[in-house]
Amino acid sequence: MSFTKITAFFMALLVLLTGGVASVIGSTDAKPIVAAEREYRFDRDRLLFGAYCLKVDDQFEQTRAWFKEAGLQFPIAVSGRQLSEADLDWFADNGMGVIAPRSDYYLNMKHDAIWGIDLCDEPPAGDFPALQKRVQELYAQDPNRFPLINLLPMYASGEQLGENDALPGFIGDSPFDTFCEPAVRYRMHVSDYIGTIDSDIISVDIYPLTVNEKGELGTYMHWMRNLDILAEACRETGRDLWVITQAAGLNDVDEGVTGTRYCKTVEDQRWQNYTAIAFGAKAIIYGCYYGGWWRADSHMLNDEGERTDTYYAVQQVNKEMAVFAETYGKYENHGAVMYNRIHPKASGVSLGATKVDAKYKPVMLTSAPVLCGCFTEKEGDGSAYVFTNMFDPQTGKTASFTASFPGAKQLTLYRKGEKTVIDGCTLRLTLDNREGVFVTVE
Image 1: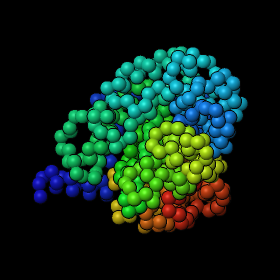
Image 2: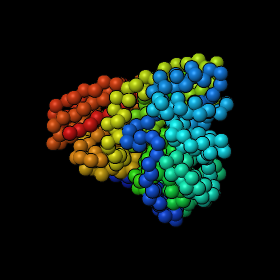
Image 3: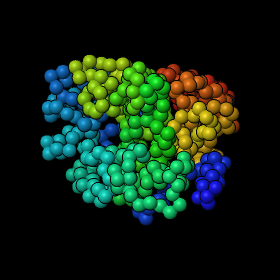
Image 4: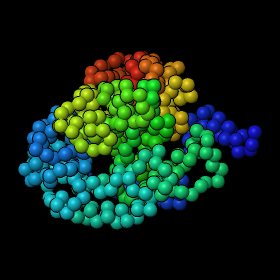
């Protein structure tokens, strides 16, 4: 066995034993910027729901009504005709807003419904300095209007990221972070971003759900680590995390082809959402609503403007999560820990997660792969947790666990839209496949 492979083996063993992986901070020479906190036209103290792609056409009165009925609060990437003053009034009157296109028409409009400007999608690192200049110009024009930059996911190539330097000690076939090319380059990309861009929200799109030619459900293997890298960057530099989830696809499960799958079930939407909020996501944004990429009949609305199964799945999960959306905003995230991440049937967890301080974690008893997001109350001494079943979806397996919170007097469980108060300090649950829950502890 070569020296590099021996080194890789012992590094992998260290990661498994300690639960820690390499940090974003220090991945490049860029000094992290603690972002200036700003007041926007939307409520940052709650969980928000948005969607990419809103086509404005002859059916707009109906499609915007369905947008609201789905529990969505803002669209990004508005296409078709331009939104009129009356259109924006409708959004504002309904407590909603728009991340508007970066055109002179919208830049020159002064309206409370324009929550932000869709500045740039998936830029390489070389564009960051010019984007920082543009971000500051937009803030100078309107400090309450958010300039959205959406980052590439971790499965982007080094050329797309603009991070092409090979690192000493890199071992390309190792699944562990120190030696994993996607993770190394992605940490560099995020390090460069937080060292250049002074904006207090980080947005990313990650489309992790797949199907193969046999109809077997799968996930992107580095899904959780992708979220973890961004969540750490947010915690360290005072930013909120926005996650764009997969609500469209190229292949239906029964078509016998390989690729991104339709995400038209409640289970798939619920799973993506709870995995994202375990890492502290403050906005869930669905791609796509009406118009957009991939196949139109996989979107929430198809080309004819008709609601699809994806629409009803998103609507149901939004309804469930709205029950705790405001409560969730009262807590701050300290990271997520993955229990039994080396379980052979665990999904999307090959790189583990950043080590979480023991004082934030519950006392867990489980043999199943369970993701636990750890939170504390911003004003008070309470805590909160997100628990998610991380069994591979193809298994259909449930995940049973017992979590104890020493000293707690009462737990509140939010599960599938139901709120249950539990006296005592112990939670015993069996989560359905792809299910997640939110729990507060007093």
